[in-house]
Length: 262
Image 1 (spheres, rainbow, N blue to C red):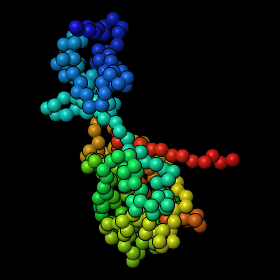
Image 2 (image 1 turned 180 degrees about the vertical axis):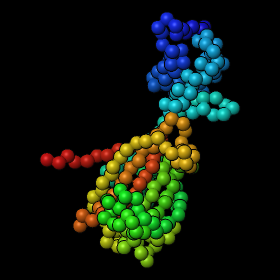
Image 3 (image 1 turned 90 degrees about the vertical axis):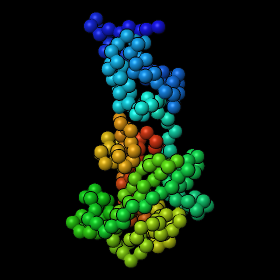
Image 4 (image 1 turned 135 degrees about the vertical axis):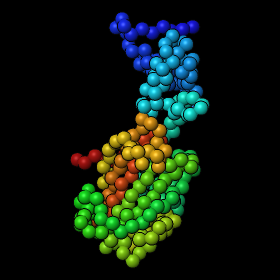
């Protein structure tokens, strides 16, 4: 059965109509995650439109992050099983001691993901102005150590983090070298040296990824990144680390529970 579509009589653009119907089927669960969509040729025949029009409808859904297009195979409904960042207790000292896991590894394990972290370069650098402001250090001097980490779930890269620690804290410690200073991560090490996370500030925004970020994180077309600017604050109200996280929005989610001030 074909569904003829027009366009010259005031009706919706044909490619948009096809995209709308497929989107509705995806959102209502009629086309569950992992389902292969009809090919462009099949859609063209079904809707009596040109093949290019059908292909353009698929591209619309790809740009919205609803489908993955695999070269030589077709278009598939994107799987969505978010790995949630639990902002309210991810830095809990008690949980770290009980599990022996860093925050990311603990979150992933709780949610059924196989996770690992790969360390990147560790350098003494000039901090970006926003980082310098939050740490209270000089942005015109090499006043911080920058540690780079890549986070994987089920062998897929899901986020990257750039952690900045004041040179005055990191100097002469394992924090200046690649790898975690302790199995439970840098926060356990910092805690042992008098820097305990008692309060955090997290500023969250979203944007489209830069080309290099999309390539490194294997981000499909149409998917933004969630940017989290995290600041750890000590019991004396001193900030001692800032981390800029870039999270894949098609895989990662955010969950915060917090008290409301009177």
